[in-house]
Amino acid sequence: MFSFTLQSCRSSLAIIFVHAKMNNIHNQPPKENNKEGRKRNSLINSPEEITELILRQIEENREKNARRMSEIENRQKRIRFIYEFINQKMLDLEDNIEGIINDLYYAEQERF
View 1: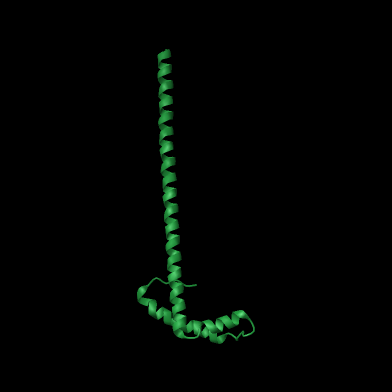
View 2: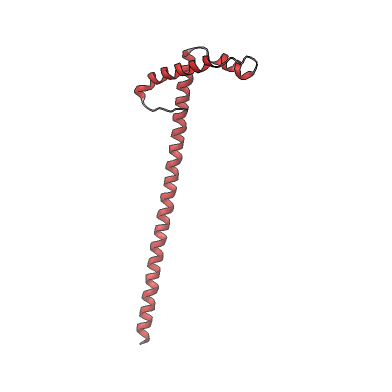
């Protein structure tokens, strides 16, 4: 499945797809004996229907891509939050270690 986002090429792409789809349909042997063949032969009868199908598929792909981009953005936000959380904990740990070292140093100085 191809997905194009260029608005200026939409109509010419649809025409290309219509011709490709029509050639594909006409080059296939009829399968009148089974449901798939009857469905294929009865569903797509005209270039307008093929164009409508292609444009619908393009729109569905855009919606899927938008959902995927939203999911990616949410993952990035979670990763950023986790990174900042871990970074803050590391800074806190560094401060605690520095405090312990200072306490040990002063305790040793008081001993002498």
